[in-house]
Length: 276
Image (tube, rainbow, N blue to C red; front, top):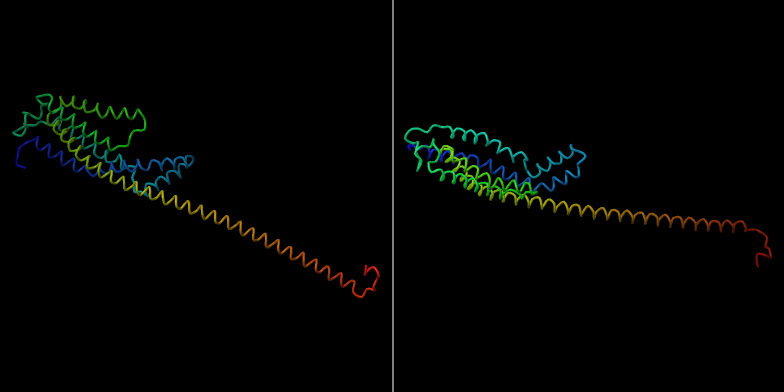
């Protein structure tokens, strides 16, 4: 830009790097939200197919495809980012700042730690706390006390440790880490808003599907009950028809028997007993 300043270059580069990582971070947040919503259905599948891993895997993949969720997208963005972050961290820690742009603000040389020993470390630690705070607020509540305690340690312990370590870092690295965290904090607010909106849409879709499944199940139950009642009615009608047919045959048989008896008596000599 024609302005010799390592400090300004680090700030601009860090902002650009954070913006480039934004889509990956957003993907990670959306995936985390989606997976938390799908946990109840995944648990039901695990209970239903606990003895058949092949069917469990097939049904789980079908569930992911149905709601367009990739379980790997939760950790993949972080795996992509980490090599760049570590490489940049190492490069800025050992870089030799020389020339007219080696000083920045109150720091005479970005190669040396902050001469005050407190301003840059405090900014680095506090910015790290802000980013952790807003990031954890987007995560689901831990299920057990051990996880809650671990989150508390990470939220409060890590920023203190990083701030203390920053006292010995090159000032250029402290600037990078502080700007990285501040950008992360601001972008995380936007990420949380977008991820929450995506989560609400997915929740509405899941609830609509569950409602439709319940209605279809109720309809099938009504149809099954009607079919059962119809089968009983037909069976009763069939038994009644069979009974009526049997009664008709018996009456016909009795009538036929009387006719045969009359025919046998026809032409027979009268007997006195016939009139008694």
